[in-house]
Length: 384
Image (cartoon, rainbow, N blue to C red):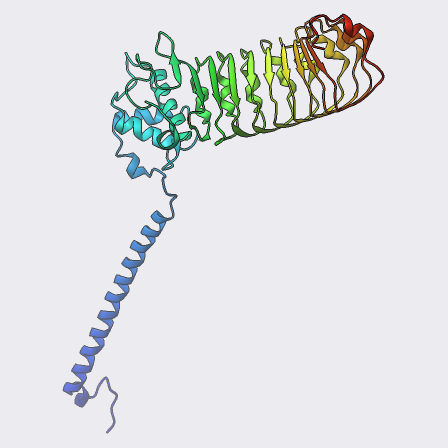
């Protein structure tokens, strides 16, 4: 008589059934192990992937925790002057940081005898060194050796009696790359002159505007690009600015009137455009205004006569238009006047003959009509 499988005595006593049951348990046990191993592998792989996706050069929490207390203090100090780069491998900021932390023989740390400014100065100079090709392209230097303000100053700098950097000057010394914004942290800097470096490019650092002691700024015969940063006009102690022979562009800002001590402003051979803020220059102490070979437009306003101290005016090779205002003759200190290669029209003002100090005057390449005023003959210093 047929019975169900679960109640059949014949079936339960069958040895083949026990073998089949054992195989089933083995199968499911193996399957569970495989699933567990797969889950573990997936978790590990996911963790490695998330680590790989983090940007190279960034400092992770685990790596940061390995810094010593001294290194923590220094890195936090460097962040007060570097808004980026400290955690990016091969950046100038990162290389300077690593040198200070691990290789600098002075091993400076802020303390009762070593000020934070002293440490920042050394860090900023190291950033400058790495940002401008120091290890690879500088011709001769002793940077990163000993004290920067010892008896043997680092090449290109000079310091005051308090071992604070007061001047940086390089002429055809092999600098290339770009100037770092951190240079604005050298708060006692009085002179910054870097010239004749055709491979030194990039913008003029906005940080220079923080240098309230800066009197002379010469970045010329280089390859700087971009506009003059608005922050620069905050460096109100500047009396000399020379940006000639670069690739600078844009308009001159009216904020230049804030620079009451400015005497010489030289931007020959760039790509500046727009109108020249003559009214604002009149509020400075300008004596030398060099605008040659740019793309300036507009006419010479009557307010040109307010530049009472002006001795040298070079406006040649631009796109100036209109007539030459007669009251330009009121510039009694004028020594040299060049208005060549524009599109000026009209006649030569008779009043120019009143410039008794005039030694040189040229108006070639314009649409000037009429004859030279007779009183020009009375200008004894004028080169005939």
